[in-house]
Amino acid sequence: MNATTTLIGSPAVLDELPAGTEVQDADGDSGTKTRDGGWKVVGFGWALDPDWFRFPVHVVNPTAATAELVADLAGPQTTHILKSEIRGILAAVRKLWDEQEAELDELRDEDGDVPSGNFREWDGLRYDAHPEQDSEMLSTVVSRLEKLLDPSGGA
Image (cartoon, rainbow, N blue to C red; front, side, top):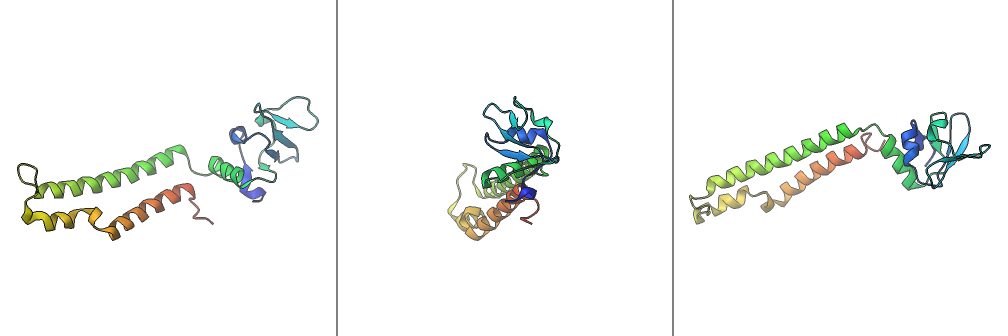
């Protein structure tokens, strides 16, 4: 990981970093996050607030976990965008489920049972009887979720 993968543009992201994390700001000042949430900076006898730094700030020698945390916190996705996409995924799954249930209900008799003459059609409508369809649907859901986590596509 290099400095560009851990570029921070706001004090709110600094607040979320773990104790012991070292950062350097745009002026070259370095600070280390303390256990109490402040920032120890050489030349100051007290902990400073994260808004003291001149942004952008980058993490010095980040661990993979810290770089991932910064990417998650400072990334382009907002909670609103994430919730909207998750709602869209859930709506698509519910629609698919409801459509399947409606088609299956048409095969049931007045007692809710499936007459033996409708078994073949019943099995043909059930998605769980078609692993290739399940796999394709699951792949679509996974792909949409991956885009939420990495909208750049790993570039």
